[in-house]
Image (cartoon, rainbow, N blue to C red; front, side, top):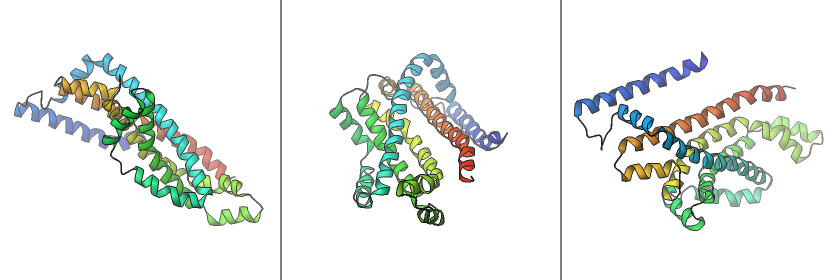
Length: 253
């Protein structure tokens, strides 16, 4: 019931939006080549469901590998930067600069450098999703309770023990915030990489549909992309809530 209360307004607004879109297409007699009605998009999605599912699975595979590696690298880099102040001062400007490179320009270069296999797409996903998690973790580390840290130090705890018992737990909320931000980019980054060069995936499907002037199928692929992103966000929310009880028990022991 709690989930229903939070999702109900979004469902109502989405229903009103699609109803208005359907009505506008019917009244304006817009060409389906330019603006297909939601019913046409749904029909195209149903007819092409097998083909779209095949491409969607390829996108899910790339996004899963890239996003998982991005989380791992973000943890490793954030821990390294936390313990090495001089490295943090040198690396943070470079990490910020990496986010100024347009993904539209970077995706073709990745394909040019590494070919049409899995590697360029995974690297692009990592590059796009890596930064928000590192920044969130660094901010979380800085928010550690000073009193708790000082108490551990007075008891003879090492820097690693202080990090494990005080610093890392304090970054939990910020980490999940960064994780949610990164998750919204994971599927999009994968599709951009596929759009620039791949053998299968939603990016290739969108490109093929566009070249065939099938706006309904382009929008159908967009719907699947949005659905995958929402599913990833929902999975992160479930993990956050599932680990929340254990975290609260650990911090109150």
